[in-house]
Image (cartoon, rainbow, N blue to C red; front, side):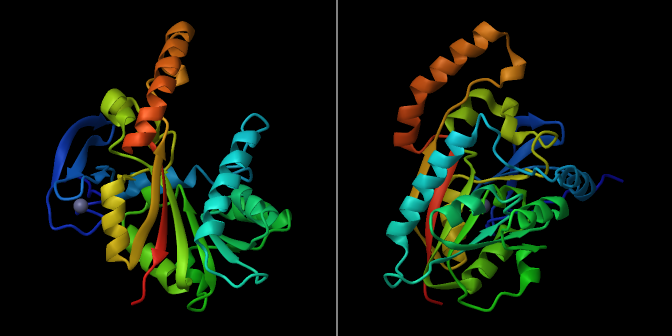
Length: 287
Ligand SMILES: [Zn+2]
């Protein structure tokens, strides 16, 4: 008997069928929703569960010394946009919740940027590491934290929703814990990017062996539809970056040439919403 696929229907909630694409991964070809373009893995529930386990380490997703400056620059930009979108009283603390905070890199930045910030993290070692550095972190899933309704001004959800078979369930809980007009920031990969068009199955982001539990790939359209179905409107959406090769798969010279070509494509990709990193700012609408 064939093992059960984890995802049998479009995770956005469309009626449309999932149709196999030419992007062939070890788990089988990715399938695409005919309505919204969402790409989904054919991974089994068992393989999905074991791929997630490998990623509970104390360091979690902390930046290295090499990537710290890039992390700081991105965080400054993200929190700058958030500040312009949050409607809070001047002088009042802005309450922020980072879901899937791992070992606390973004949470730490949020605190440094003046937010009253806390996190949620299901991976035990990463959550413990974050707590040891003085951050306030709930160990578990958002639904288990039972925050009162209207608790937060801002929720950040970075590199989380591509792991979820049912992202709508999480977004509806986020809607509940956000204050009226609250802001949700979603960061995820763009399955309709030029990177996907050009390198297809070789895109590192698709590799479940390298990125445990990446099973569902959004695009600006599918994320917008899901947001609307869960009570949000899109305030701002941007994409960035194109990549043509992963460092390990080509010789050094070829890799550098492809890197230059990718840098030339980065600006038009950003303009046309075809970059592979997608950052979307959503606002909670009234029920
Ligand atoms: Zn769909």
